[in-house]
Image (cartoon, rainbow, N blue to C red; front, side):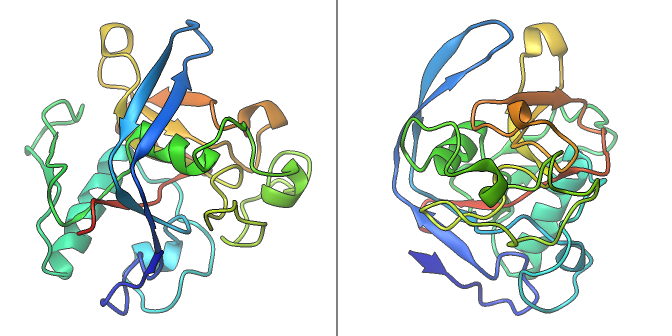
Length: 227
């Protein structure tokens, strides 16, 4: 089911409502695998665009915002929530450069990043497939991007209606990668316009510090339950 935000300038002009379920995740570096439960949630059909990030009115078209850190993304979630009179999901602490003191209220009505499990569940559309179609049809990647990021929505979506979950830009998620080894590093998913096919798979995981930003890393937003 599609949900249209009441806020005309919202980055989430179009969200998709998903039922709960389970998803199998795997870390290819360590070989560890686990099954995660996913509660009902909403996820944006498109990555946040540059115009939307700047607060400009309009639809979901345009280039995806990039060069945003994990900390930038969660601050934006809270700012957007406040603009729409929703309860912010994140508790932030001034001076917390590593993001280790950030808390998330999963029952809040406001916007947030998807969890890693939510992202992969949406990408796989509840099934086992690593990709939701032929790569050249669904994703901008190393072999067809021309060396640059493209406007959102230019490729075929998956069967649940999500565009560009694979390719074009990597997307931040909420999760820590492995705090016992990498400390505050957070996970990003999906592959980007400069990456080979191997990176554009549902199971491919990357990580970096919450302050890291680069020209093919962006985000899309979620909301919990039926808020």
